[in-house]
Length: 262
Image (tube, rainbow, N blue to C red; front, side, top):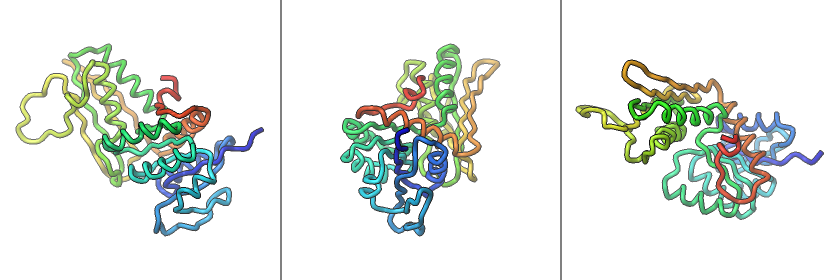
């Protein structure tokens, strides 16, 4: 049996980093190679599983690893990915909130390294995206689309990347451009609902890992498609699945849907 691949977990002590490390420990084909945190973190130097020490030196962490899993913030992800591209390490990230310019840089870096960028690594959520597209196509244009999402109070970006992905599935099924039909705010005298609008409402509260509801509303009835995450473990397990798949790929920007065969 070959040696387990060494994983660098970026944001190793964060909410998702903790769960990714548990998922790595549960996977015999992987082991923790390095744990990266921001400079000044109070737990720098702490020893974790497999004798790995929490550090803030990205280059040293990459040198001790075979692939990267990253749930952090755009600036950290891009800085680490640039170095990972130099080292040729496959990179999986669930970071959200990238600007258009940052997304363009991700595409450029993917020319040098295998990369998966996904707003949600839950297998069930990605099946939900597929189902939303199918339902929208079959119901037709007479059904209005509205989305509601709720996440924990500390989440930095809104709406969630998953909500955008679900809205994009609706728009694609209708042959629309999402930007032309997206409604993110309603207040005051808004007038009648624009034809073809796709609304997203965002809630932030407590410690909710994530919940997304899609409403397809027609005359006299509505279809609701809902996913509720009770823990962060499904996201971590999906990232592990993506990393194992990506480790065998050549440079390029891949989708998690491709990993799942959707």
